[in-house]
Length: 181
Image (cartoon, rainbow, N blue to C red; front, side):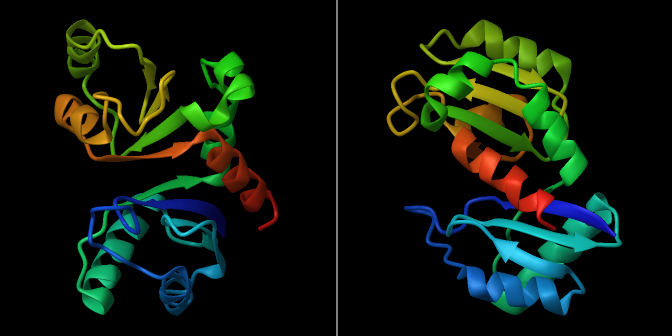
């Protein structure tokens, strides 16, 4: 069994109109054979163990969520080992330590094309700093994420891939939760 971290995109966030109680998410995960499903916060973070690989499991979870709740929800899964690697390769260790609430990991569904990352870097000259490594983008929001023009939607549009962001405090809490599994 592999320990997975699941990030659900755009549930229980202001303005999305998509509410999914975490108790119901845990019940869904358990019904699908996920061992020891746990959630963190109310923003679509789950940790569980399952024998199926991430790609097949993402599709299965998306289909089950659509069937049970009538919602199209994108799941982004990483194994606990992948999550630990994400933490370890953080290119902005000082930002993570000094201001973790303004430092964000944006998990991406797939790795974006190198040309799209290069174009985003050339086009956007805001106060934010970012680095894309594989399927993960690390972003520093020095003035906060709420009013930034460097939004998740803009990043997704420019990179051509879906993603969801979590601040570094949440990233570390998920890592700790995954080690308890």
